[in-house]
Length: 610
Image 1 (cartoon, rainbow, N blue to C red):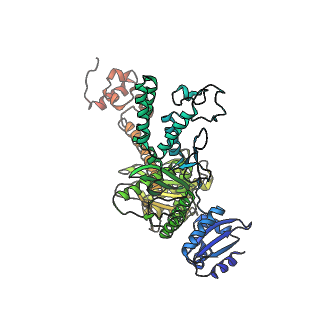
Image 2 (image 1 turned 120 degrees about the vertical axis):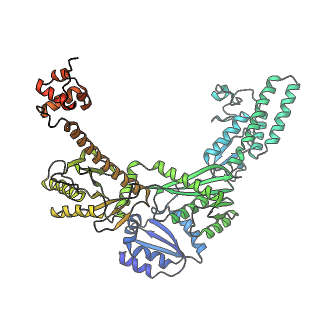
Image 3 (image 1 turned 60 degrees about the horizontal axis):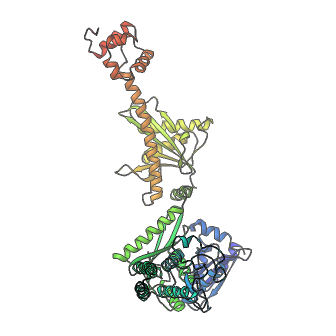
């Protein structure tokens, strides 16, 4: 279908709740969405496309046709949307990569040699399943803790098949396993240990500890001291396991805290699991920055809980999301529990949400590469300045003190990074007095005259020109470019009272605030600081050189070559000033040496034959 045909079809849709399914020319589902009113929502894709984000524009460009399913209610549309997203996994929907669900521990006591294993789903196979637990890491830790406590096998050997076939593994020699693979080991004792493991998984620490304590006392009474010592160690391990409350810490939380954070290029959806006020575990999903953070979190929230098969008592959210109540009702219908979804405004709950958002930001920051940060920042800067992404940026600054040694710097940032080999320094010429505007005009004119002439080092034009100063500085730069017949994007850098660049300003005086976005604010600030640093360094070099030579100016018989000889030999003006006449005469003719000596000693005729 053509774009106009898609637009016409969308305008003919009913004002009813439902689901829309966008397809490409190969009939692949590329996006699934839900709408309270299908006509209004779907039509938005085909009107005012300029206001769409790049991702949405790309998606719309691939739509060949679409289908809709009218639902009886918003709730029915929500259920259908979740089902279709899970079925088709559309390219332009934000999707959870991990939908394996919460893990369980499986134990089948019907087997002769039962083993504890980790599984993703409950099966109707007669085994007992414990959990679910917050993550695979927590579940693995719990399983290994129980195996170590009761010295049960954690290897891959199968019993009774592998009994006596090989030497015991390293776990046996490290006293982490009782060596059940050896001949002569009792299957009855093995099953008794497994029964204790089952009790631990059920949280019956006290009964297991009491049983082991009784066995320990009996062994001691029968003078079986080695066995008693082994049972004592096992009792201590069980009590330690109880104190750590690994089962409680592993089971699904009673409160989940949702966090959202984003960097310049990536966003993250994070879930912190809490039980009894204690932080147990964290899940997260990193994805490209979405067009709408509320819609993204809403979509991921649905996928997250529906794929895991159950829900906590309470979910704390960072902001309001659409259909929160309908989603809560859906979870109740699916799992028999209706969680309370809440956006806290104050107190401990708010601090928990802030912690979740901090975790989300850190995960997004961790996987965002430096190049992605630069690219995203430049894209955002381009949007703020209503231009394409500026790949090459040149920045100019003027430096002088009381009108002396007026210099200018030009620094270059390419792809967001300093390109120092392209930096340039200029001495401002033929200005009797300090005039920043005239200085800036001269430097810009000279730089781009070289560009027009194709001179080496000047042949590349910038995408963006930044001038240290306000509207007037930007305007004189534009006038200098006009004189050369050039047009470029020129902005002034406006400082706040702390000398940080708070905004960019057009030559016409329109300010574009940048302090609302930390990435752009920091980037422009770094450009401004680097430009100023480069200018002031050059100015100090010239001033130092001038001062070094100025005190020697006017001394009879001391020209430029003898100045260089003096400074090279004595290293500084202070050393020249303190030199004796014989020392000077060893370097200079007597008349010149005498002139230098008396210049620094107020013309007094002192005898220096020391």
